[in-house]
Length: 282
Image 1: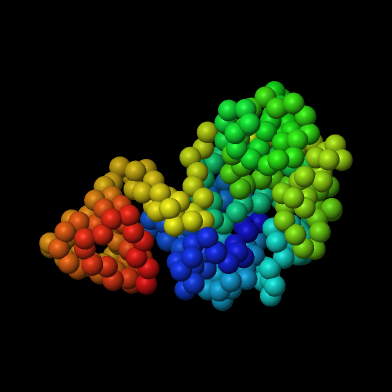
Image 2: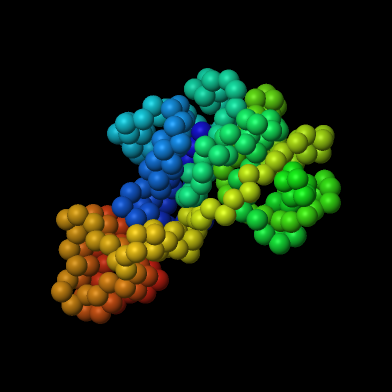
C-alpha cells in the first residue's frame, strides 16, 4: 500500500495545485518512482490511498499499466486508519506499506523475504546511525527497542526509518479506524512485548516532504544519471541561459540572461534567469 493521501503542508504552496504524490522528481512524478520500484519487485497488487486532489491521483493511477487500485478517503484517516480502511482492496495477510513522499533505492524483495523468514509483527526499513541518533533504536539482533522517545530495551545503535515497512497480519488486525502507525500502533505493540525488526540497509533515500528535501531529491536524480542538467520534451531554454545542476520540465520555458543553479522548473512553468536554489511551479 502506498500512503498518498496527505495534504503536503510541509511543501507549502508547491502542493496547493498538485497532489503531494504527483510532484515531479526528474522526469516523472514521485508516485511513478514508487510504483516502478514495486513493479520491479514483482508486487502485483497495489493500493494507493487518496484525499487531497484525489481526482488527480485517480487519473494518474488509471494511466498505469499495473493492477493499482485507489482507496479514497473523504476525510483523512491517518496512516494506520488508511491501511485499515483499505483491507477490502488489499486482501488478507502481510502488507508492504510505503510512504508516497519517499524515494528509496531499496531492495524491496529482500525486505519482504526477511519479514517472511523471521515473522515479526512488522519489519521496518532502517538506515543505520550511531547509538541514540535517528528516530529508531535497535539492539544487537536488529530488534527495534526505541521509537522516537519511547524506549523498550538497551540500544546498540540508532537509525533512520525510511518510511517503508512490512506489516504482519496480526498487527493489521489491531489497526484502529483512525490514527497514525508509529504512536498509535508500533509504540503500543512494543509496549506489550511485540517483536518489530529492522531491515538494515544503506539505501539512498529521499523524503520529498519539504522544499529543501524535494530539491535535493531532484539533484540526486541528476547525479544518479551522471548529468549536470536535464531538459524535458518541448521545453525551451533561452540561448543566454546556462543550466547548472538544474532540471526543466516538459513544456516549460526559461527566459532571461544568466544561470539557473540548483533549480527545478516544473512542467509547463515559466522561469526567468538568474535563479539559484529555487523550485518554480506552474
